Length: 291
Image (cartoon, rainbow, N blue to C red; front, side):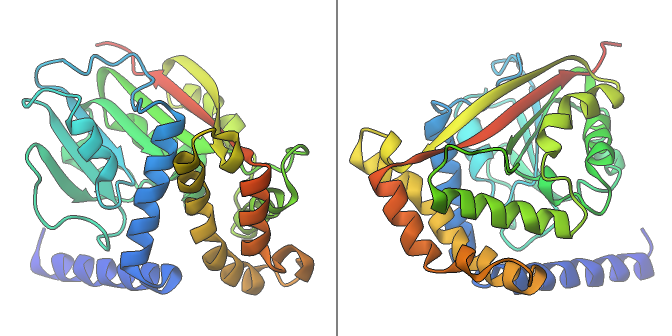
């Protein structure tokens, strides 16, 4: 890379980080929210990360986590793999990213909407992405999946977990339905299909992946957890999300009824504490053909 290109890249990265910070507000609060969300999801998944049949004990295992934020998931995975494993965290933003390697974890800047850098192509036994594909309006989900598939070594697995924000959820408490409605409507405003999760298996196949499977999950919120500590922790992620998405939605979706936003955080806490609900999601995985 020549000096001019390097400077331009640094300027573009700084602008991306500035835009992201403007969107999320307080960076420390946002990384804490992401960490709490990770703990909630891991609790709902019984602390399982790899649903694809990847041998996590393989010597020299290589794993890429796209959309890694501060690397919380990779630090959990680090406990499950041998010291010889190579774990790479990639994110479009450096706002939360650690500034140096953490043992066998290193970090790189990469946008899932762009083709992978040469040193990420054809390398990984597993590429993992969680709650990132909803942000791929720039390229579209199919192109993002194709980019991810390019990072796989022969025989490697791509795994995506995405929460379901489609509108067909009639049995949820009203406050949770309102939260899902706000997030789904905002996605549509930027050109995304809020039901993209259900189309992931086809996108995986179009990217040339084999042995594609979809598993449906339910991430319980609130009273569905018998343990009070788990109940309270499960309420936190979207309680912390409500103020952020409501502020953005009022600008992006002026046609949305004011009743959707009215006392939403209070209603959400009450509904989840008294009734509870389930945030559905999907886990999709597929394998690159062996050489």
